[in-house]
Image 1 (cartoon, helix red, strand yellow):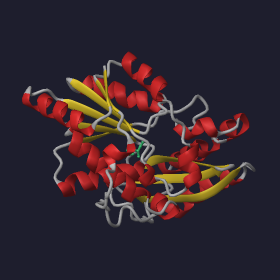
Image 2 (image 1 turned 90 degrees about the horizontal axis):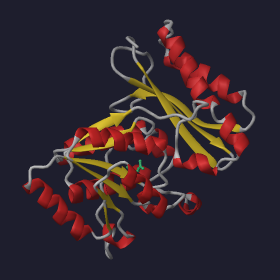
Image 3 (image 1 turned 30 degrees about the vertical axis):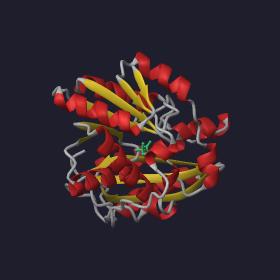
Length: 284
Ligand code: PAF
């Protein structure tokens, strides 16, 4: 496994791999790897000749300085883990390799970027879309792997891939959960033991709503109320939003029909903001 710090080196390896007709699977990350990331790496390993993982804590997608500073970083630990998963290249660039001096070009996916996470974290998806574009352009992957937990990010990345003409297939991997049901996230390690245990209520609420949907409740507002009620019973939880939106456009919906709906929640436990979602449609 080679660790690459320079963008130029990553470019030339990507060029060489294309010349050799090797298929490339790419897993973009911000490091602090957990089981959720490793599930993406495992899928990537199965899917292509070469696996490239990027580790870059992207300041452009943090609207809160404290959140950026608190974000866990452990390149040595991450690299050791990735070597065990037969990753071929780790692309871990310095800040100036991605954002050279004078950088002033941003990618913004209109509409999809504005609600939910976009409303709570202004500028977040401009940062995500910009860095994903730079990474795709550098790595030129055949496939890129993203976790279902970040449903809005998936919609943004799919849109930009289509709109900017990247020949990259976006592969979505189901959310990996702790034993309690809490969605795996690098942020979980910043929770106290008690918060971490109690945060499992988010998924319990979402699951309850999914069950209610299966049992015939199709009104989005009723399903949202089910999640809200359960989470509000937990004194450590403070709800940011609970929403039912179309999975592709992120437009709010009123009734669950044939197309995929994301029922999502963002909830604070102390200073830590956690997100999770389940997919609903009439047939599930
Ligand atoms: O999901 C993440 O970890 C990040 O948003 C990503 C896709 C690596 C871009 O910085």
